Image (cartoon, rainbow, N blue to C red; front, side, top):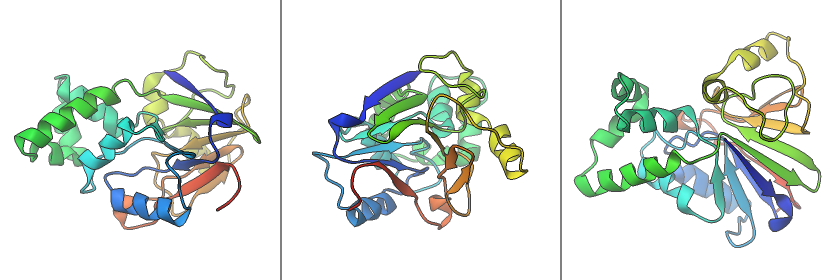
Amino acid sequence: MYQKINGADYRRIFVVGDIHGCLNKLDEKLLSVDFDESKDLLISVGDLIDRGSQNVECLDLITQPWFRAVRGNHEQMAIDALDGKYGMAECWVANGGMWFFCLDPDQKLLATSLINQAAALPLVIEVTTDSGKYVVAHADYPGNEYYYGKPVSEELVIWNRDRVGDAMDGLGAEITGAKQFIFGHTPMSKPSQFKNQFYIDTGAVFGRELTVIQIQGEQA
């Protein structure tokens, strides 16, 4: 469930919001920050796939040495659908997964292999940087106290919107144990900070901006 990254291994570290098959937007963002694949690291909050048009290409990012990702609910729907879990294929299609069933045989074979690899993605990534500890998860980190390896509900990490809903109602609370928590999952009109939680899904697949933030290193 957990993965730890030592920021000292990289020059700069960036975190990207929900990509949803929009690889061209990601490429533009990385170009704008002069991203160096040999020195920098990009971490995704999950939801690499569905609704956009470059889903296989976005899934393939998980094979790149300069890229890390937590598992999002859209990866989980794909994993569950291919595992034959009852009703999950229909659920996936209803949430943007039809692309998979329209692939030619070779592409479907590649996509299946990548989705199987996505099943091994962590749900929580902890990054120790020169400015403090960051925690990346898709939707939420359950509870108000974080520590590495703490048992938490996988479903809540991937799907929960209760915390962000409360925060938007003015009822937010700090999560202890890290400087900053970075989430996606819930589309925002702009990157939104509530207490020490930062939400960076800004609806790129709906024609809005893809958000990329820098958490370590000098600005380009």
